[in-house]
Image 1 (cartoon, rainbow, N blue to C red):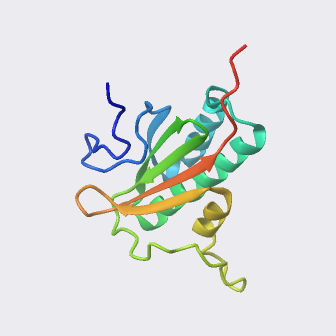
Image 2: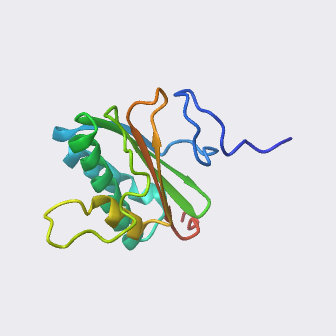
Image 3: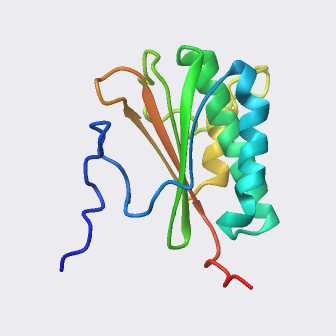
Length: 155
């Protein structure tokens, strides 16, 4: 029996990263739903079996990416969360114009600016962050990979 293809194309037509595990969370959001999205992530934290610090990093990354999807990606988005081994994947997609600079956030932001730090912050907290176009070439799909400890055994 062969193992699942880690780059298999899912039903959305996207090539996903290590999509061998089921989604722990799949939730659409809009500006009015950001608080609810954070609350949902916090509520799911025990299922993730990650430390308090790892949970805090996830909340920051998810909030920054979701805020960017709302601000720059058409006002709505979708967050998908899954775990594979010692990695937690947080994928945020939208239907905006997409991100043309695949290297955004790789250089510290200008401290005199009032914005433009979100992706840089995410990159500081993640082991990897990929930026791709949506399945039809529209929108952005940003996948943040957070290194987490090995899943603890459930009591």
